[in-house]
Structures are given as structure tokens and as C-alpha cells.
Amino acid sequence: MQSIGEQLRTVVIGAGQAGLSAAHHLRRKGLVPFADFVVLDANEGPGGAWRHRWDSLTFDRAHGLHSLPGMELDTPNRAEPASAVVTRYYGDYESAFALPVVRPFKARTVTGSLGEGFTITSTDGRRIQAATVINATGTWDKPYWPYYPGAREFTGRQLHTRDFVAPEQFLGKRVLVVGGGTSAAQFLLQLASLGIDTLWSTRRAPQWREAPQNKAWGIEVEANVNDRTHAGLVPRSVVSVTGLPLTDFYQEGIDSGVLVSRGGIDSVSSAAVTFTDGSTEDIDVILWATGFRASLDHLAPLGLREPGGGIVMGEDSVTVTKVPGLFLVGYGASASTIGATRAGRAAAVAAVRVPDPREAAVAAG
Image (cartoon, rainbow, N blue to C red):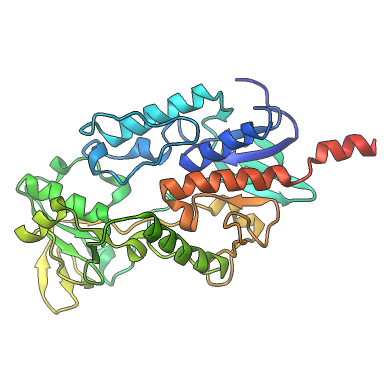
């Protein structure tokens, strides 16, 4: 691996959509790979969180992937696993633009400040120093498991979206899928297609959206999310903002009775679940498709969170107000691939505007 400068201009943590976009724009702004900036990635290879998705999630069923700047995503075989499509695309992108990705490097802590510089320490003790940090760690490493009375006493299997491998692993089981997002709906349809007995639980009635997505709709959604992050509030779940797209695929599931929610969960026992309507059902497996939270534990030493757990973001939606020199991408409105691409550019522009401390040191000398 090429040697890394002792004091970098900026470090990008994460090589997913947002991180690669930021790296691309840092290069366009004239920063030199390895001498001025690097991209730290916890994975063994390219693909970000996509490389961990289950094979049955084909590209045609995945949430839309927005092309990275400067290199369009060729039309793939839509029946190919999304994990393979995106891993290949990201890998080709890193090579095409000679991006300085260092892997595996899993950040354990980030310490410091804008004036003194930031130190990024890996889980194996390596350290990298930089004047600014662009954090693009996404959410995959922070699955959300809601609490329900009795859940710890359940003797069947419990797993999260992150642990899903294939629907065949549930043959002969009665499966409760919990969650109101597209992952939950897709799991239910996959399981039902194999004759697996399923039930669906959502806290609120599924929010099906019949209106087609358009630019104005997307801008409104993004503005609503930004209003929360500018105020330091915790971002809401994606589905609570966007709703579920009512495609023909999902309509068939509704008509067949598969995509019909039993409502919320009241409690869990050793082999059954009681719903808020008072009914109880025997269950073998609980699949928690309950989403993720921002993976920011390594930033805890910087004290960026508000008492309620949110982070106050600046007007550019990437600058952390309490920690100058730290930029978050893939957080809040930029959690989508199109939002992540735009946020990557905004963060790169903001990071380059910070005076290079190395030049100041030379001038002082």
C-alpha cells in the first residue's frame, strides 16, 4: 500500500456512496491521494453496505441506486443480486479515479478538534491524523432492535435484516416479520413465494404511497428531513417520510393477504406473540426488519450529540455545528443514494475551504 502523509488535509471514513462521492470531489478540487487525503473502509473489499445484502435481493427489487459522479452505472442484469452489481460498480469506480481507499480500517475513535487536528484510531491501534474529517459510515453497523416485554424469553429464533441470508432458511417455520418498510414487505413476499407461513406486524398501518416519485416530491421529503437535523432532532425512519411505493408487485401482495398487517406488538412469550388487538399467535421465528440508526459510535469522544440524541447540522446539511471540521454525509436527508451523492460533494467543498494547516506551519516557519 502507498504510504500515507503524516498530516492529511482530510480523511473520509467510509467507502459507500457518500464516501466515494466525497473522495471524487476532493480529487477534483486538487487534493492529492494519500498525500492530502485517504478513504478509510472497514470492509475487506469495495461495495460498502451493499456487499453484505442477501443474494435474493436482486437489482430490480433494490431501492434505486443513483450513479456516482463522473461514471454512470451501466444497465445491469436486473435479476442479478444487487450486492454483486454494486460491489462491481464501486470497485470499478475506485479504480477508474484512483481513489486512495485504505482497507480494512475500522475506525474505533475520532478525537481532536479543528484547531489541533483530528486523530482517527482503528480497532487494531493504527492512527491517522487529519485537519478535517468527512464521516460517511452509513447505518449498516447499527441495526435497531426495538424493545417489547418478554422478547428475551422467546425461545425461537430472532434475527435482524442485517442477518438475513435467504428465504429457504425459514422453510417449515412460522415467521413474524416486524417493520413497516420495503425490506419487511420484500421479506414477506419472498417467504410466501416458498409457501412459508408468515405474519406481518407494524406499529402503524402501512403507509402505501400511490403518487409517483418526482423531483418536487423528493425535494419536499429532503426538506422535511433537513428541518429535523437542523434543529438537532433524531432523523425519522425513511418509510415514515417517504411511505411505501404501491407498485404492482406490492399490490399483488396486498390482494393475496400477505401484505396485511396484524398491527403492533403488545408482548412476546416463549413461543408466541400477543398483538395490540389482544390476539395471540404461535411463532417460530421473529425477523426484525426494523431499520438502522446512524453508525456514529466512533465519533462519541467529540461530544456531537444533543441531549435527545440528535445532532445539530448546519445550513449546508453536512457541517456539524458543535464540531467544526467534522462533516457528516449519509446522515439524515443524505441517507438515500442520490442524497449521499450530493452530500459528498457538499462535504468535499466545505472541507477544502478549511485552511490547510500545513501551509500555515510553513509560513510560520
